[in-house]
Image 1 (cartoon, rainbow, N blue to C red):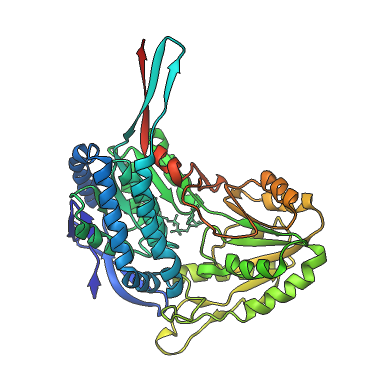
Image 2: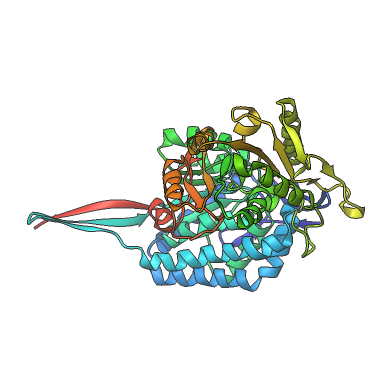
Length: 480
Ligand code: NAD
């Protein structure tokens, strides 16, 4: 069985403890590879390698850093098909999604930051006739980057690319549930000619490897994407050490549909924004509020479309709904469907686990599920489910829609459907969210700030925001 390895000091290596974790293929429910069960000893080796590499990498010219990142971006593009198949196998997502979104965006992330760093400049201020102030922007040191399983290579690269572009060295940990494309990335870094120790990838469990990264005194900044409770734990650990923190956490995103929307466009996009990647995108709109005059029309059209979405083999080009990422996650999502019914909800579509034929019979498949009849305060409408489950409910006024939208502890993304321009601006301005999409969803411009408010996170990624996070500003004041 294939054994993945850590990437430390430019080498692929086994974990010090020689322990391994089973890696399951969600489509079949079977173990198909082994990943290093690393611990703090492997993290210590990675930090040592990064420390050795930092003095030279931090002063490597912007042009050379950019060249290496562009090379990596090209290699991802050249290996797109292999990476897409690996991502689909490891995560359970339809290969078409990995091919069209995950892998191209991972390549774009490296391309974007390879060029952004060449545009990144700092400020200078004349202080009347007294002084000149300018701001140095220095790499911080060793960045700890920890990412989740839902968009594995895409979110991994979203952190690593700006960290490296800004001149930091990196110790990174992908999710133990989806380690494969991070491992393939380490092979591509070797092929690209990355200097040893600049990027180190340590595989393993969060409470072991992740915790060791967060606790390590030589890692002054942590960029984390994952669940809110993990983020809270990381914040508690890192705060007494005064580490710089970027936390991209969970969401419970509202989708507000007004009667004056472009109905056909809204329906097509709402199916995607509800169920893309089996609903396992932090930006999916899981609470759908529809203005009453079109509620029945929406409900009929939406439910009819959702009923036709049948989960299938993720490796087939025609599949649009694949498997959920793990057995534990499938069980969690099913438990929420049960909870919703206990809370008085009605299942309008889906709600059942699906058993496919032959080798796929033990895969983690679930019908896309639509629920109705739940109030805004119930647990189903307050807690993140992170699966193919949405609730629908009518609203009567704009004010009520905004109140429902803002009424959770989260504030990551929000979606608004209206053809009324004034309303679009007015509602967007009132939503407590880091991102608001009007008449679209998941349209991403990498220059924009990305992140959430409330329990959805602290800080912003994207564009120059990430380069600011991964650098330390220093004011230099020269008296005239
Ligand atoms: P998770 O919090 O369980 O794990 C995320 C990562 O943290 C994994 O690599 C895990 O091994 C690691 N980890 C776990 N315990 C740790 C610890 N004590 N110290 C350090 N690291 C630790 O999240 P998940 O289940 O992998 O991902 C799903 C969650 O991620 C959802 O809540 C989703 O909303 C969120 N998410 C947020 C965004 C965003 O941009 N805001 C994007 C994608 C996913």
